[in-house]
Length: 118
Image (cartoon, rainbow, N blue to C red; front, top):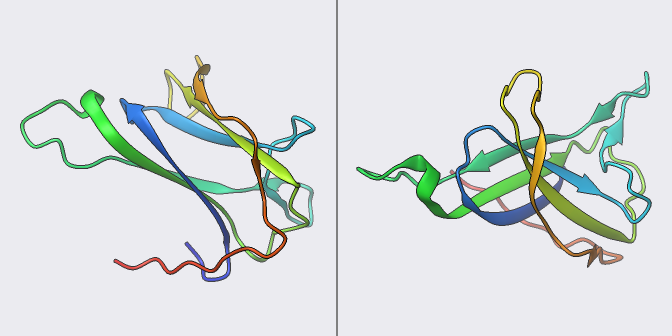
């Protein structure tokens, strides 16, 4: 995650395989930065603890991180909500279906700084 990025985090329970996180503003628009060609730019990772001898689909406390690189960041909305989707094909997002969502969360005027370490 590049330094200076705008970072959103959340938690989930369930199977992390084939999941996609999308963030929306109060106008139902996907949150992300735009490049010079108008393409949406946002990245994400979905993390799960090592299940040891258990099944990955039994994740009790997974984390997701969604970020917008500073070079693409624009004005943030006042509120944001997250949706977690399950897909059948991770390359094409075929079979996308909503599996969970959140209520809106207000974004503060001044974003707190965070430090991510290995």
